[in-house]
Amino acid sequence: MASWVSRALADIESHTENASGVAALRAAMMQDGVIGQAEAQTLIAIHRAGKRPSGEAGWADFFVEAMTDYYALTREVPHYSQAELNPNWCHAIKRTLDALTFDMLPDVAEQPSYQERLAALGVTESDAQVLIDAFTADGMALDSTELRVLTSLFARANVYPANLRTFAWRALQASVLADETIQGHEVTLIRSMIMGPASLAGIAVDRTEAEMLCALDQAVPDSQKDPNWTNLFAQAIGNHLLFAGGTPGRIDASERMWLNEKLSRGPTAATKALETFLAAEIASNV
Image (spheres, rainbow, N blue to C red):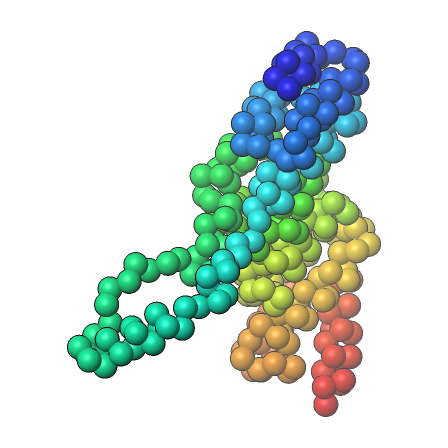
């Protein structure tokens, strides 16, 4: 496989116009069905060096798939062993008798919990920093391929470190403000971040996420927003007001004050849709 990878990398290095460069690289790296650490680092290095074959449409798709495979799909959820699922009751009873006799339990090496093992398989801060460094190497706003990578990752993983989440929001904001436009792929990324499994508040939208959505809505004219933005905004902010606080199904005084402050900045198509959404939801709960 090494010769295949080397040959494909040489084609890419020379900026060959032959599309077999990406095709050969995909075939070589996916022979075993997964992207390993060395392979992921090679692809990131190509991306960071700016030598990726921009003329080959297959590169963007392959890069997104490979990063998703390495950072999300290969991190399998841990499972309990047969010993954990079928405990040794005789041993447990003996430990209980020892405790009754000597008023203490014998020391037993602590095993990591299911949640601890799950967290250990997540993307670490150092993992995330490799991607962040690669995506910021050129000093420019993220391109569509880089945004696709983030979208794919946030749509799949259960947990991500704070540095990747902060970077994703800042990169998204920079992308929107650069052209004062909310494009379709940016809406898709926002949806994966606030409603995906790695969302800060799970299925609910928390105050930090809601504030960011409101800031983006106010910063971009309605004419420059993707048609799907209005629906996403109404559902997300409605979700925040009705389910993220301490009064499920209704809006309390503090939430009403926050909402009025946001609406006072001037109506947009999204805030009008939000009012309609809230009226319908509250009426259905009465």
